[in-house]
Amino acid sequence: MKHHAFGRMPFTVTNVGFGAWQIGGSWGDISEADGRAALNAALDAGMTFIDTADVYGDGRSEKIIADVLKTRGGARPMVATKAGRRLNPHVAEGYTTANLEGFIDRSLKNLVVDSLDLVQLHCPPREVLYQPEVFESLDALQKAGKIKGYGVSVEKVEDGLKAIEYPGVVSIQIIYNIFRQRPDHLFFQEARRKNVAIIARVPLASGLLSGKITRDTHFASDDHRNFNRHGEAFDVGETFAGVPFEVGLQAVEEVRKLVPAGATMAAFALRWILMAEAVTVVIPGARNAEQAKANAAAADLAPLSADVMAATREIYERLIAPHVHQRW
Image (cartoon, rainbow, N blue to C red; front, side, top):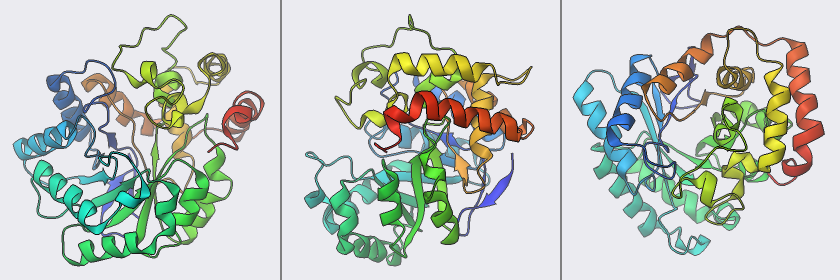
């Protein structure tokens, strides 16, 4: 794995990090033991970036991270969390200084730290991005030492472009993968110009780009790939990257033909993301230690050729773009 400066912050992170949504919940039955093993395997492989959120398992993910890091000791990785989705209803009016500070205090307690490395607004309503007072609140919390920096996790490219107009925003987390290519049209250029770190999430399109999902794959009732197929619980773009399931399966078979001998499709899909120089870190999740090790190894694949990159773009434009390009 390569190491990058995390935008304008004094952190250096590996280009493959650990996405901790799965060890929190909404991915079916993943035991705490498997979650700990996955995180330990990621850290053993050298990963130095962990992404979580206060709502992943209602704090379970943050607490597992804290316990694993305490047990391991030594140099700590950068840990990014998120705030805002605990609001019910999740509306712009809820993004007050008091609420944000309350969410941050809770994460400080869960992660057992005095200051959060990075807090990200968790896919806030678009109106929040037009409220400077929200970002002034984050500036004040940073000045008070409760957070070292802040960013925004977004659903749409337009929201990312708006968020980086605020000088204090040091990072944007956005969906970017073979099935969601729009960020590299304009957003990545602007982010690089402003030295904003880019965290690429949903890199395997909720497992579609692992190549292991079929029409007959069963998803548990508490797996978002079951209960959020049409955006019933949160933005549908978070589930299978917003691609209709049957369309995704068709595209996967075409992508499969491009995977080099000896590589898995998952590794290929992660390596594809790392071809974008604007991406600071990609954050695949892992259900167990084996998946975490495989994610780390993806960075060792040889760079993809221009022909292969062009072929993935053609598949995207022909099959996927009509369903996702203008939506996100």
